[in-house]
Image (cartoon, rainbow, N blue to C red):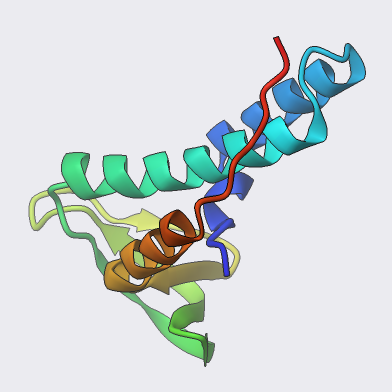
Length: 124
């Protein structure tokens, strides 16, 4: 199981476009693309853990939620977000989708993959 929800962020989309361009120009192969994508996912988890200190406050109407393999998805209508008690609220016109997962689950999956000892060849 892989957490790929970071790939639909602006940064993830730009990375994917660059990787596809490298693939077309035969700079990298498909195996290396997958390694880069997985490293991007791990890096996003690490950076968000270290860099994000503020906790947002979210108000809105919960329309739908689901939990599948410890990954939660929430759909919220008319959301209002505050980053701190002193900030002005951010209001969105459309619905908001939040995807969250347990960080312990991510680290346990990484350990399992490391134990398998998969070797990957890199073209030079």
